[in-house]
Length: 387
Image (tube, rainbow, N blue to C red):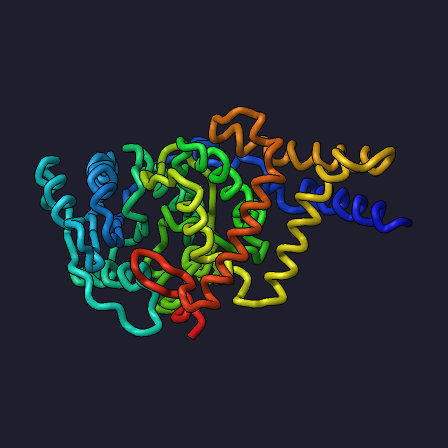
C-alpha cells in the first residue's frame, strides 16, 4: 500500500467511524422541544444565578427575558455584578423597575477574586450563597450567562423535563448569534466540534460515562450539586460546564440538547472575536499538553484537509477516495448548517473552517506560553486553572 493510499484510507475510516460510532453527534434531533412533557404536580422553586462582568450592552435584554418567564413556581433572580466598570448592575436594576419586577431581582455585589478561582465560578458561588441566605434552598439552580435571552416558556419546559426524568442536570446548547460573515463561517462549526467532543446521545445515556454540559443554560438539582462537592469542586475550571457535568453525572442522570428557545445576544462580528473565544479554553481542553496539541493538529489535518486535497489534486482511485470522504464530511456538517438556517454551500467549506480552528487551537497554546492563557474580561485565568 502506497503512502498516499494509506493516508486516503485512514481519512475515510476516520469519517466512517465518526458517522457511525460517535453517538450520532452530527445529528441535530436532540432538542428541548423534541417531545411532549407532562407538567409536575407541584412546580418546585428555582433560583436563577447570573454572573455578570461588564455586560451592560446585553444584560438589559437578557434580564428582561427572565422577567417574562411564565413559570408557575418561585423563581427569584440573583445577578452577581462581578466588579463591572460599565454600569451593568444599574442597567439590570433599571430594567427591573421598568418591568415592575424589583422584588424578583437581587443584585449581589461581587467580591474580589480569590487565588485559584476562575472569575465566572467565583461569581456563581456568590450567587448561590445569596440564594442560600434567603432561607430554604430552592430545588433547582438555573446557572445561566448574562448574554442569554430566553423564550417565556423555556424555564417551565426545563423544569418539567428535569422532574419527569429525575435529572440531576438539564442543559441546553443555546443558539449562538450567526449574523456576521465571521459568525456564519465559524459558529456552526463551533457547535459541530463541541458535539463531536461531547456527543449528546452518550451524555444523555444513563449507562454511558460520557458527561458534559453547555454553560449558557444549566438547570441543576441543588441537593445533588451539594452532594457532588458544591460549586467549589470546580472552582479552578476554565471549561466549567463540562467539569460540572462530569461531577453531577456521578450523582444522577444528566441531559443535554439543542434549542431554538434561548439564544446568545453576544456578537462576534469579526474573525478575531471568535479566535479569542476559542483560544480562551482550547488548550485547557488538551490538558496543557504539547503532545496532545501536536496530535490534535495532525489529526485535524488528516481528517479535514486530506480528503479535499486528494479530491482536487490526486488522480484515479485516490481522487475518488478523497471525493467520497469529502462528501461524507460535508454530509456530517450539513445538519448543523441547516439548524442555523444557512446556505448548504457552507457545508462544503468545512476544510477551510477547520484550518482556522487549527490556528485558534495553536493560538490558545501560544497565549498560555506567553502567560496570557484563558484571557477573558480583563483576567488571565489559565494559570489558576492549572494551579
